[in-house]
Length: 416
View 1 (cartoon, rainbow, N blue to C red):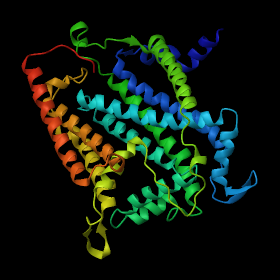
View 2: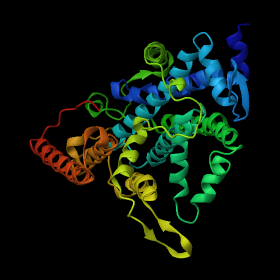
View 3: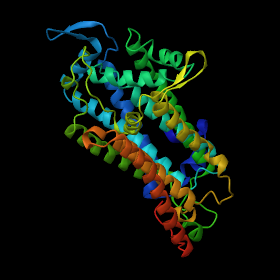
View 4: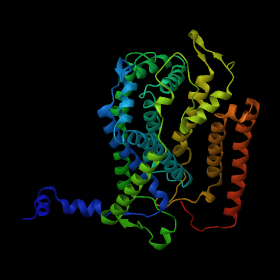
């Protein structure tokens, strides 16, 4: 008796293969953004395992090569001294960037094609949660090298969290193990970074994929003409799995080249935490928030009852991102028009949605530009003018362009 037949009699593999492994997957380049997000997560877990074997989440002072250093800082120096250790740490760093970028672009595709509508609202919310948790996971990793840059950047994050009126101090101290940095801060952030957030991400990714298989994949509009009422694509096994396997190998190859050529965050350049505070800029996914914080005057303070206040940190770091997040959550409820949800909508057929999306993207761009205001010599007055006018102008131009395309009756399927 063959092994497959033995397993089939007990696990009914034939039924599993027929029901799930032969499901059709549309082949379109934009659909690979979801796979790249998954590949980045896998790379983060694999490289993270190596890092955890050699990292000590502690601020205790030890002697490393004749110098007294915090144990966390010294353990990162030790990792960098191992064969390919610095490259693996760099790969871990860049894979986090790629995961956030791919998840953002994946959600952007869903947004401009209307794939967030009924019955796909749940997966839209899961996707928002995945993107948010990926950003939080990246932030909790900021502190782990425990160099001067890491401590300064994490203190900024602590201050933003603590700025939330009434509950901010409590929330920040629970997450950071006290007023950062304390003896408990690194172990607390380390456990959140390597255990709780990855497990939550894994659960959400699994749920996201399960719902997608249950509801069937969306597909480009041209599939409606070629195979009405059916999914136009290739079966998951073996064709889709083979494509994903090749893409994963390609991803790893590019990632290791990137990690080897561009070594991430050389902690020797900053040194261990000291009395001086280095000038730091966050990574690109936080830079737009940092830029807005740079634009808000310290005088923007609104007193609240019981000694609380709304301050610039709360406005730029919590309120504005919170408003954008709330808009994303409410979107499926506000845009509940009926549609053939198996097929993707053309951006030109929905000028308002497309133009608002472009305006928000330019809002992020100007906020990011503000993060470099000193280097670019831009004043707050110029930046505020740009932050208001450029998104509005770009949205207006996009709206007129989309109306023009739609008015000409362009029914041609485009990428997306």
